[in-house]
Image 1 (cartoon, rainbow, N blue to C red):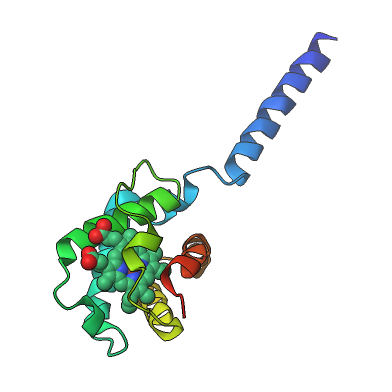
Image 2: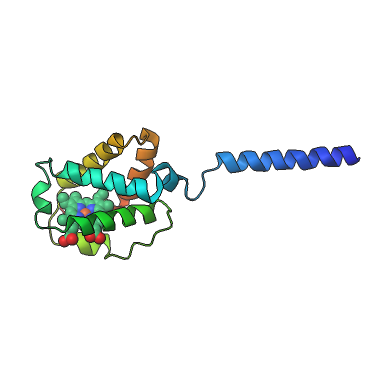
Length: 143
Ligand code: HEM
């Protein structure tokens, strides 16, 4: 009887451990992106890539890119469940009135993907971040 109980208890612990290691944690995407330091590095690289992209580089002329970098990284951190609070304006307010196009949206996404590639982020993780950012499309592109 005692043995059965013990075995049952062990089994529960093993099942619990397995469940923990396989179930996605709330902040696993945040960790896979390298936490705040990794997200900042990706954002930095994305900005470097913007500067070489004829589709969008003119859009960032005169923009304070230090502020953009900090704000974008905080936004991503918050979107992926990291311990950050994005306190900037909404995506809608920031991007309204510029008539950003589908092509420009794709260019931003392309440069983000390239940056993640350059930072060694696995494709499956890249796709998880893109899925989190995709809903922002409706707040950026109105055309
Ligand atoms: C995945 C889509 C996008 C996301 C998630 C995004 C996110 C953001 C965020 C978080 C900021 C605020 C940064 C800060 O705190 O200063 C911002 C600013 C900005 N975004 Fe976007 N953005 C997206 C698409 C675009 C596109 C397609 C363009 C145009 C090519 C664009 C142009 C800008 C500009 C120019 C600013 C700076 C505004 C200013 O400070 O005057 N964004 N974006």
